[in-house]
Length: 220
Image 1 (cartoon, rainbow, N blue to C red):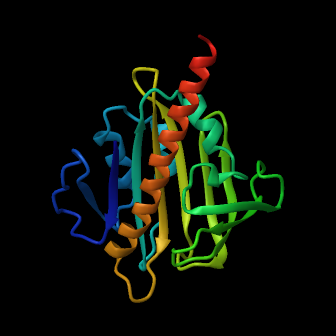
Image 2 (cartoon, helix red, strand yellow):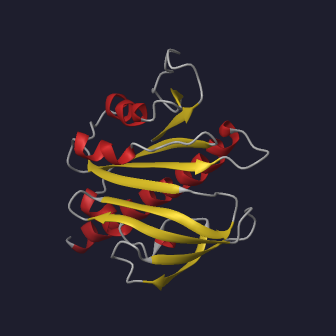
């Protein structure tokens, strides 16, 4: 099950909506640190403070910020991380990407660049992206969009992985900040990006659950 948390320009004193089910939590744009704090209190599986700091984004006047949380049952965190950490192979689970090519670096060192091609039917064609962080010990990966044919300017994303309390599953948290395109509202921008992120994480869940099942079958 996935949850979505939005960071939108509302009264800081406004009561937060419930995090139950797929409801949205609205937070003040002037208080981006609340996104990480709300992640901490809204999940069944608590996220360590050392990981929450990565989801604190600086949000500009014409930007929006959001986070999507995906619980993956029966897929160990190491299995999920083996897929997510591949900066050179995002299309393994990101279903709206057609291909990826590393154009600078090795895809592991910070500063590596990739050129991804988007499937037809979306309002985008390609994206040039920079690896900002890859931490195997803490299971953190982040990238920023530098250019390309799309409308998501100054997009920055952080993904962290955490073992579920039962030790058999994984909790994935992906947060981002992005410019709001001219002619669109923050709500429209977050809804669009959240849909893409949610689809990607659901695809990741199916892939890694299948990988775990296939591996278990080889042991029988």
